[in-house]
Image (cartoon, rainbow, N blue to C red; front, top):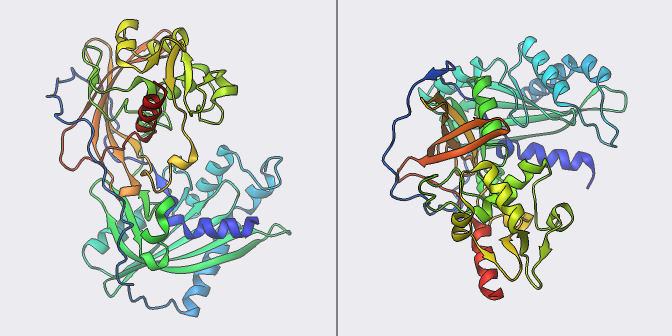
Length: 440
């Protein structure tokens, strides 16, 4: 598949792919004692299926005129030209395709903002530049006022995508224009399209959420993707962003329940240490995440014959877990799946096939508040933003950590009880249990 086709598909999925993790709450650090909440009665809820089963009637969308499309295209090219000097001077990597550094992407997004454009990077590592026009547009839609607004998404491969939102006659739509650099390093449009939106909402938390009509790239094609666009319009405080990165990482809710169940060092509840181990192993040793395909050669673990299971030796498993959680070895062994004849604990690494329509994509953490406690520990209040289910708060939890000389340790996690909670299931835990039952 050539690059242009790949980027065309990416453009179609912009409304599905963008997850810009930006927060709008007060950034002042407060110091207080953490109140002890009542424990949640249920720590893992059944996860509803994403909206993929029904096909709504196609929205009657008035096609964008040729004159309007030409205007959109000219605007996109003009925005791309703002970046030309930076692009020519940038280190583009050594691969056959352009790969811009995070610093270069940040510089380019900033340049767009300084030139008056509303812009953000594709991965949402930066705050939206010039977000106010989108905020005004979102508030106008709430009030039933017709209008337009545009924002630009910059990719690390140097392509730029314009998203022209419109609300007219009660119908919302987005018209996309995608621009790349040609062989002469001049802006060149390589795709464009118009899509109806079944949802266009500015939430109370400041997220602009859009959902494409299924006939134009929404829930029907999103079995392995996401029908929603999420854009955080109010800046995510740098301290909160850094706290989320430091204590939760980019795999926070991925196939472990460290942050999705209520537990403490006096009562570990339903905390699953076997599922947690691959995540903590990666952090402890500074490796890429352990998967079913790399666990053998990265960690050197023994494979259990005729299964996908691996055995993490007792001492190593205990060392990794106990480096981040205060749990004695006997309790750890009692609460975990192990096999004395194999000399260790069962571990099942993730695989790509577990992350399609079988299981929903995982949420992202959004720190909304934090405070230091009298014992020196730090508590983070976190909302799980779940684009796959179209919600900016699938559930809320409080994570408490303690910094140490060597790093930090997790002390507890409390999940707020709500009938609306959407807790990601542990697919691999079920797979592990099933395979262990066969082995034993």
